[in-house]
Length: 223
Image (cartoon, rainbow, N blue to C red; front, side):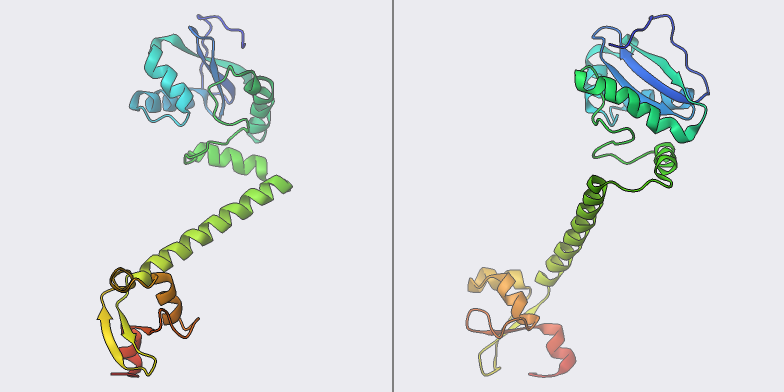
């Protein structure tokens, strides 16, 4: 537990590491700031709005009220390049005790939230000239892959909404559908197979040839 005196709250415009302490439960949140007073005001603003990135701190605030929380300076840090490094020192000591409201054991990490400009600057400062660990590389690779997968899904969803033409094996037009999804619903042929046929990745789907209507009109192949 972090030692504190209820009357020793000191918040000024210097930079360093701080704790938001619940004097009732003795639990606390650890953070770093370039300006203590500004960071304190931001925490209070988000807590009052019910939008704080730490759900644990927010839940405690909602249950106990604002009056039970005090802000304490743990350490002043003159060099802003070292803020996250020093914050990490405190997280390494206290996070695994179960006494913190912090979501992550890594300084500067807020899962599921957007970083403030201040945090972005702190992260940029500490990462400057630092080689990425294998863990970091894997995380970045996974993030890029997720973006690629999301892009592919959006393209796939757009493809399924395109009007399509159903033809027999002799290229005679049989029916037009407003979308591949509609074609699947009416014919029972999977829209994914229809899409593959439209993209000429397979010759047919469900015993029929399929083409995107706009492609047929542009090429004037069958009409």
